[in-house]
Image (cartoon, rainbow, N blue to C red):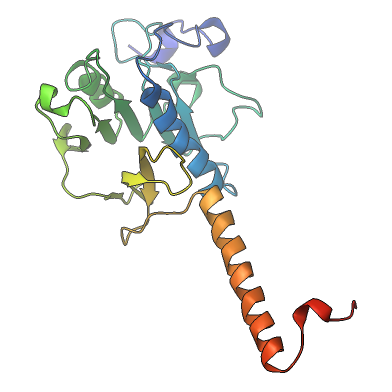
Length: 236
């Protein structure tokens, strides 16, 4: 059946969430770290959208009014802001049928079908990459703490390597620690093709400040070597 024949509701008519609360802090914090990182890395781009805990409405299930809600997802080739404003939800029939290219699930104490039901939904949707982060319950679930699946010949296949490079996105993804995090939590980060982690905005600012400090120090040492006191120089 064509989507035009389904009498599909608009995004304003659909609930913006399935009303299911997140199970733990990581399910909200980790995707937001990736989002804020992208807002810095891709600040000059307007052809992407990353959402956290947002309903994705689609027509591949039993009812287009029943969404799937990833902990995080990334779409490419769509407006950064839909018609110049924020989205309430991600409605595929209002996005020219563009599905997320990446979906992220953070496994919690209460299993949420990450390895079966949601995997099946994302495969039907056409989500190319499916990332499952399970640092606490991976032994219970008989899986690895960090897994990346990619659609190969119509089905998800577990990929090898971390960080894992995704050429269709132009980014790699993997586990990392953030020097700017006072709680020293493990996070997920974005990486380049060589496997080097991109700096966050806070880290980049800290690096710039340190470079400026080192430059000033070298200048002061040079002035002292010339018999000049850098603290006594006349104002220009």
